[in-house]
Length: 370
Image (cartoon, rainbow, N blue to C red; front, side, top):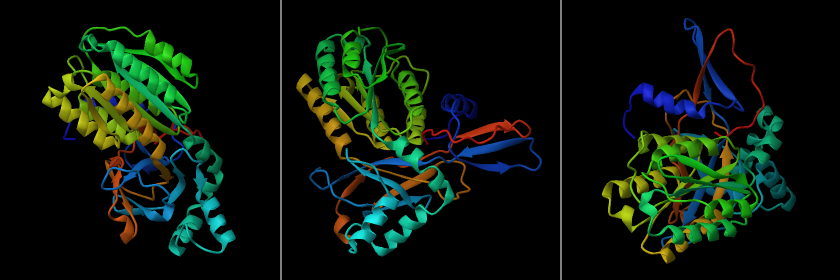
């Protein structure tokens, strides 16, 4: 993402620090009166697996995946495929032992499963994990700037149809933006409220996409579990103070995929095209460029299909002295799976927070996103 001024980065990063971590690692300086607390919450990954034709690969098991964080092998704590139920690894291990035959996990994987549930930290917070990652929250961000005058009604129709089709999502929020962000419908399970927000949105002036997207990431990051952001933009950003690189890195660190749907108007601007593609790819989402209102509806349908076929799993990071950017690599195990392709985020940055040595708050069990 490149180097950025320290002060600006810390100001932006501070927007995401208004929560208490589930678990932290502490590094106490002997001379420094402050303590740096590095948040290493449960890390959640949304992973798409496709073949050479772009078809989704289903029916994979935890033993088919290997996760490396900075080269350190990690143990999967929970596993979910598509819209199916979340399975704790202890449940999977029990099923394997009951059936006598191991068709879902190798002996090595069973050992990893048993190890992953033997620690007291996972035993004590098992129910918190399940409640934290169940379901999915979808945040929709709609461009209502003056770029949208000609195709406004068609875009509203496509978004409204998308909202109604999200049967598997727990909750949906609808935001619109021009120069400022407008929270038209807060996160809710009532689809009618969201559609009402879509229908009552009106066109504005200049477009501050990256400012608004940063605030949307901040809002989404306050909720536990699976989150995605779907952006509909009809043109380039001409009013933001925040660079897109900072927004992308914060979304990566929060584990929030960004799906970008744009029109040919934005495609005519090479910088916007490159930014949209880079941001969606870095966060594990996808970018679409629609030539017509029919293509817009197809793009929304593709996103809905993607959400229904994602593998979602989580892990507790093993001890890692790296306080900066941590690279995540997800691989498929076995020769027969090497021909498939994986799409997910490629890393995150643990969020530091400073507190005085004498006034450090006691740890809590509040569950927050990583």
